[in-house]
Length: 478
Image (cartoon, rainbow, N blue to C red; front, side, top):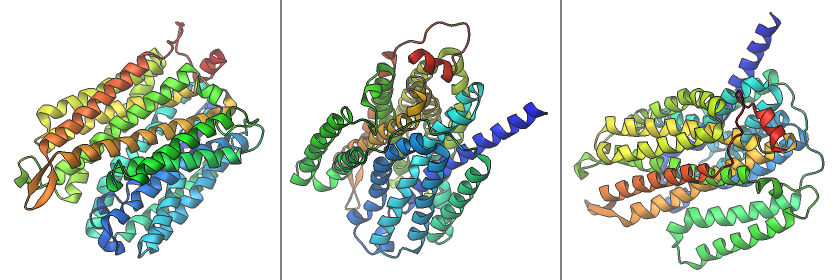
């Protein structure tokens, strides 16, 4: 009876953590179906309206590493509850917004809630027995993709048949429910690290990331050779180098770069950037092909809601593939799982060459790629946590999440440039050409193959009689 009760409690913890990750990532895709109408809704230009998406990315990138370090210092459950506050407040601010400024503020607050996902992954290591870690980490890690995929049709349906403000009120309610579930069902996690938060390091990393991501994400609008873009990218290099110099000398660094430089951690983070790049490329391309007019000869003429529904099964495939990937990691190690995931993503992109012209073809493409993403995303935290001490799991996982975000940002910039350069004239309006879409898919395929190649250089797992639990791998790594 005691084992049954313990298993039920553990299942409850995993469920709450997965739901928390899905809700946090769901908030990121809320406005995707609204992109075309945001200028009208907010009374602004299309360029200004794009800040509604950009600011969420910037806020998440800047605060996620800080939240990870705070989780190591003060407990991950406590910081997950802290993350839920800006998530709820941001949703409410957006729900009331009638102009650009409050919407941007609200979306920035929502971005701060993204730290909940790496904190949840790290907390699982504190509250679950070793034999439950693999599948639970895989599911929690994949929740980012699951929430994003399921959020598209949900947001599209609400935006098409109800007020767009309902999106934010619903997200606020879900965030409150998640906070209550964490409070009631997730036990307190110990503070594994000692010391204090590196405020100067946090400011330096934040400033460097803002310059980098702002330059990359807005470069296409401002011009890649413009003084603003080049100035931001140059400032990013200087600031991040100065930040690295500081982190190597401060007593309590925000991110321990010596640990990050370990081959397993470093190469996993490099692979994470490339996987994030590959994963996001198809998200940008598929939704456009589905909604472009059929008169173009390659567009599929789907409504906003129908396009979201065609993409929804990809989220379910990610959810299904996560435990399968966890079993593969237990049998062969997370390195193998990451290689397999990257190759499956490459296969999905390869299938786009013959299948790009039909809705069913697009469904197959997105589902295959999502299976690969489920494998890849589930294996990364296991690789990271098996190479860092317990006192740094929060910071290390948050830094890995940041690497994925950098990959998606660069992907948006690169694919955006490709689609803007390869266009056709349709009724006096430039639209991305079929060649542009196919080129973008090939770039995504190439990125997935690069991720597999990088992963192959990771240190191999020692031959042992059975699966290597995360805790045992950590001991070996020390």
